Image (cartoon, rainbow, N blue to C red; front, side):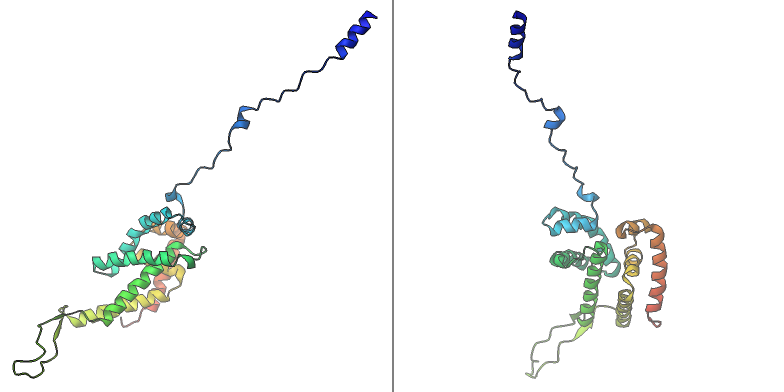
Length: 232
């Protein structure tokens, strides 16, 4: 009986309280944060969409990426460094103002070159309307005799007005021919023939293989020859 009572006492003892298992070291760590991609590694489209969402730093990256290209494009066509700088700034200003109308499915490079080209066309159009002249001399409103003076005379700055007129006509014909080209031909054509970019640079900007760039350029040159007036 003594053995029995002893065993009952052992059975009635309370089991030790359950202690929570210590968390493994990995369980206490915060979930790793995805590494942020540097801005310069993002595509043009990704940068601009982030700019539209309020990240203004991405616009600075786009300016650094495209400012030399736009300036090169304008310098090839416009022999006026001051106007080149002005039109470059106007291009990015237009980009900023028209950001709400940007189509994410469209290449950013195509969009910005189209804007720069339109500004250049407007520049040539305004120049053709506004005759660049200087006063040969300023005459008083009345002559010494009291009679009305002859109208103010002008002289053209260029030594050969006919040559200047031909150049203006040629620029307008080239602009019209380029404007009438299909977009997928026009963009690489302008990058190569106007901006003097390499095949590799064009391929990276547009996002197509180098071989495709070359084939598009061949078709673009043929289209340009057909669109350019024969007499120009």
